[in-house]
Image 1 (tube, rainbow, N blue to C red):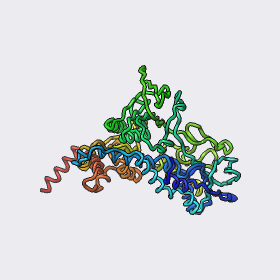
Image 2 (cartoon, rainbow, N blue to C red):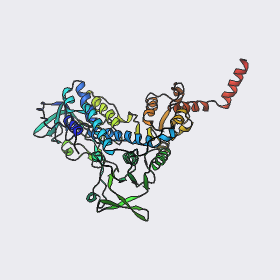
Image 3 (cartoon, one colour):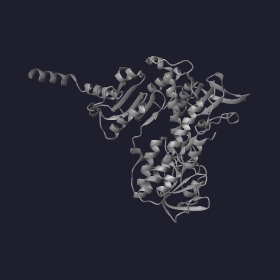
Image 4 (cartoon, one colour):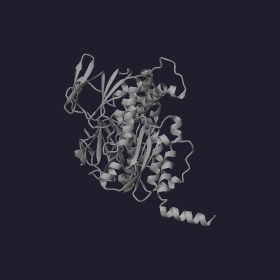
Length: 498
């Protein structure tokens, strides 16, 4: 469906009457891809006085604006409102019978908000910044030039920021039956009665919970024995319980052996060990990971090494095997987040244009899965520390003992902080809370500025807030410093001072 909001969006991120400029003789920087990494690279370089060309084959704003962060979070907010209505009785609020979700209105709101955000990523804005914006397929025609249409863009430096796309699993019958990905699910205007989701990672879990709250019968099929397998297991268990309470059905340790169509429904054959069952659905969402967009770029002509499954190979300075060319974002990184792409783009501008040696490995990148409750994480997990032989000490505060969480009825969560054994240096943290993404920044700042738990104990948190959990952990660390000897010395001192 295309409505007024989609028309406005398209006019901004891929204007139908756009005429590509005449290429300059040479550019300081040619950027391929106008997602987050590409836009930040182009805007940053142009703002510093560089002559910049930006090439986009489809929609400026990339996945984040068009089919990722922006539309998904708009849906999740509506789903949270629906859940709050269901729980209203717990807070003494009487909801009249018959309250329901208007899915068409939910999607219309998403499209309206997406269009309202789009000016920041628009072609006109970047032309106003002095960037030459080209729409079309870009391919390398040598180690120092990119071809777009019938024009060659010569560069001193270039950055590949073509992002990624939803991985397509090779399941017999899936393509014939038809399926959705994050690139197509936001075009829905009618709520499927039954939705099967392949994959229990962040995207799969976020959308599973949202659609269940909208009233859809959701079944999630995951190969691993637990959801969110990359996250803290304790955090995953809490989210699993919350999603089950919302009505999500899980088939863990399972794989889809095949799909077939029967009349108006899709039938998935699901194998769990020796047991085979069927799941019937009206729609299938595939959320089993991402694949890098490296096809069609003629990277071989530029001498850029890559792997079709992993992406462009880069060193710690984000430089490819061609020293003129850099890469940033999902096309080269395992941190496939908008904020990570932004951070890497800033490294590229510094290194490519000003002979910098900034390193991606120096970045401290937090992440958040926007289920309800959210899971936010930064630094090492307990499993990663154990695998590397890095000794840690862990402090944990459950929200069930935090006043604000009790008052809000949001006690399903915790804050867990890992420090280097024998010190107060924070090396990792996980927060599970309704707004965990807002809480993780304090711990990220502490890590980047090397502020230990002793310093955090001195931070005054407003009362009552859920961030008090961090203060409680810092206080718990300080209590470990009160050894029997120290306590004895204190007692002697205070006895003498009476």
